[in-house]
Image (cartoon, rainbow, N blue to C red; front, top):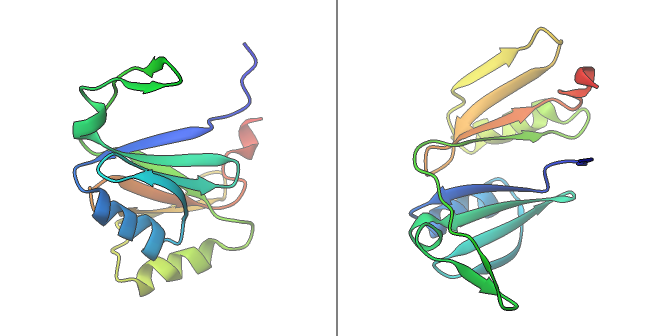
Length: 138
């Protein structure tokens, strides 16, 4: 199997409106689609952040063109990390501070890169990492 990356990441919530306000209005992500009471689709580069209402996806199969997408959901605090564009890490950190969002932690990693953590309205752990954060692994 030759995979090229993670193309979708999903978070689950009980309050889509609060999550839309946070990710679209505060963080400035591009909302490209959504279904009231079910889902939000945010485009980030070549990838998608999908936020589902867990009560909808947990117990129902969704049918697309005659085939079904199996039910799915998680409970508890998830995690997602966004990579800042090269040289933009401090700008992102200041934006979060200016929005009065508490930065829970900032780490200087052994690789020489930094990251910081904060929470979304559903208490998922959101991380912003410096550009090139994982490049030393390849």
